Image (spheres, rainbow, N blue to C red):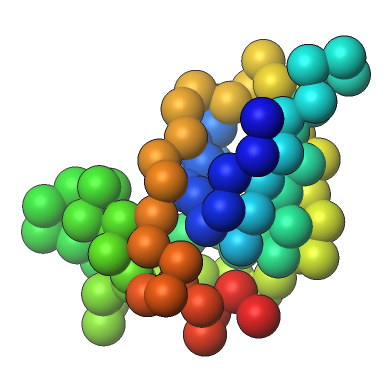
Length: 90
């Protein structure tokens, strides 16, 4: 299964935003491309507010060109607006 821009919520309070993500059911891995940790949400309406892009208060870490996450460590995925996140996920 493939996702375009997506917010990935993992265990241990990890939250990433990625340009794309693919789930490989054989290896039980999620591979995220151009992924960044969302260090501070900067929202007043919860994580889902970031679907339409970062706020002025959102803080994101440096980009990982490829990030492999064990599927068991993924809690859920939230599809996000590709246009709103485009300049942050080049």
